[in-house]
Length: 514
Image (cartoon, rainbow, N blue to C red):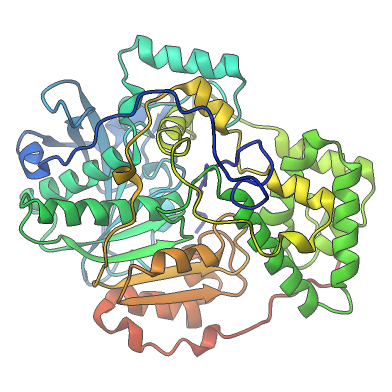
């Protein structure tokens, strides 16, 4: 199973935010904030429509949905403060359970800005689909939902491109201020009520979030708590959460990336020491510092992302496929480094077959990041690295989103209640971590886990970013067995024997396939 998951989060283009020496503040916060509120979603659901459609009727440009046995369009307010005004449609597709049904999952895709339905077929036979129906939902502004907020570029836009994209949607009457994480969560809470009303759900449902989807899952949990506290809902509908590649609600998506990257560098050195004598820690640190010192600054971001999201996750090297483990990467010459970085900077995007919905990403991230405090102080491992590495990491980010991009995009910022973590959660929460995750390191799962009293955390030593696909394909007798058991019987998941995961087998090896 090949799950395409996008973590679209950026770091400020100022040294040290949340990982370096700056305090992480940002001066570009002059746009007025949207108002704080709690909406009666039971009342909204009564006035919302869930309409069944043929799955092949779902279309965005030249792309049609090709997965799911049943599909729907959920009509919800664009602005929940004005529920009778403009309505938008959220696309939903269902993948039936392959065996005796034990419940239902809803899949929360990554990004923000990733489509769920387009990749729903990849989940057939996955650990969550064996005994569960799975509902794939294209979050507001993405995929087959309408409006579908894609620009004419993949991820990185110039100020002129950003302005043109923003104007395109504003001229169509789209209110980009409403594509927030909070309203995204509201849509799912309304959807649960409508699926229950349609007898699609016969009890509680389970949430499976991947990457940004984990943050959305925790936001849904928080907003359900608030609905109950306000008396708008009598009981919870969430039975369990599975959080895969955790992006905490508390962490600032722009300011937190350098801290995460220093955490990933710690993992790189851990594997290096396992791999001795082929890898020598001091020599690797020196050579990495030399590499970033020789590379022009314009290539730093691309090389950081290659190092931590591709190279670090390799064991051997396959130069013909542009694949090098860290030991071999630092042996290359400047021309080869530039070639790798240039390749990372190239974006392929077809506006006739969009698969990234950047206008939604910008609206979601830029509503919070400019005003949200940094969660972390400077990373304790920063000082162990040379100046050139520090400069590269301190200004690192995953894509072309930055405070500068947010200033150009100009959506309204949200109040602090929109990015608070949920209160204590007592129902089962399964945390899945790839030990080699260069985007959402396992340490971030520890941040979120403080709110969970009934949790099980599984870390896969060979895992990358999002490990559900590893569960069946790479480790069926260990990770696959544990995940399947946990989601089928969440009440007893903490009694599972997880010792099969206690391995340290992932190493860099001296094998080069040319």
